[in-house]
Image 1 (cartoon, rainbow, N blue to C red):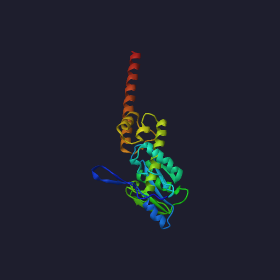
Image 2 (cartoon, rainbow, N blue to C red; image 1 turned 90 degrees about the vertical axis):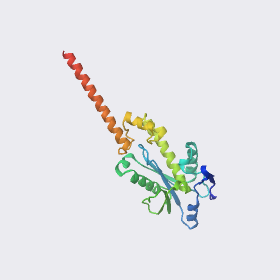
Image 3 (cartoon, rainbow, N blue to C red; image 1 turned 45 degrees about the horizontal axis):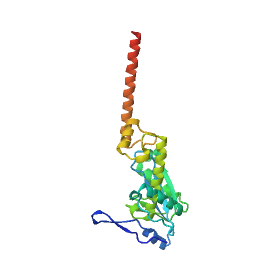
Length: 244
């Protein structure tokens, strides 16, 4: 059955946090507008890896309990909800590659991935809620919702699908490029990642024009150049000594 009014959760300092609801989708459905999708992306901020976008059309009669903004959930709970969502809902996922991010910039690449995810849904939606302030280029009505992953249930479901998909992908990239810690930080610019960048230089999975990656590439090139110069000087000294 359709989800009722969401529970209210009390936070510190007396504030109240409301879980995302199915109200907006239900209002459209009662006016004959269906399917209604929610879409969200994950991965704008990291220094490495693709942006992953997901679009989800929830089944009003089989909505998994506990759907929330993916950032509010533990990794284990996200995995559980991911399996429930993909088993009961219509969904699609799209990725914007490193090459597209480098070519188009992160915002355009993200909007492209969102549009691709919507277009890949098995049944074309008649209305789409998208997290954020930007509309995407799709054939149906598109409604941006700032903070939508905490307000609109379909967007929250999409945030979970996108997050789990990207986390799994980053774990695969970690096996391809060990030493950077992709499996733990998922490409975000934490101190351990920055240290590995400076030590190893950027991998093929790093975003070429993000400032920390540019800086690490220059530092690594300078380090290699210094080592090459030192090796050349040593070789020349050995050669001279051999002649003498």
